[in-house]
Length: 130
Figure 1 (tube, helix red, strand yellow):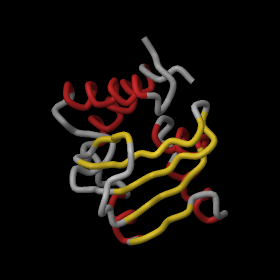
Figure 2: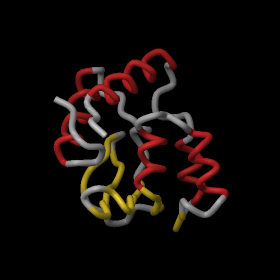
Figure 3: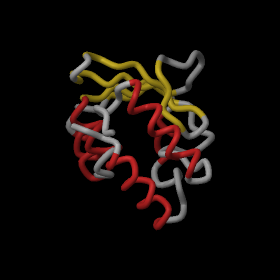
């Protein structure tokens, strides 16, 4: 059953899907980044990426913090629209604090196999309701 993007149930679904597909997550396994997604249906959401997965709450000591609107986050992570992410960054909708090189290193490094990345994206889209 689909769940709203970034809800606790959705995060659990995404973790399960990543484990079932061999552990390849939406993010590189070495990435440690805090994110604050603003303006979502449940209000602002504090998350962090560690071990290739989204997790709730902020990670102490993460070198980079990303603040972005809900619609941009959804476009990036659900629709895979990296061009929209770049446009949002250039227009100031995405704010980065800390080590920008960590963020740049993540680009395209999550899953080097394009077919596997596409299959993972499709499965995540199937469990996303909004």
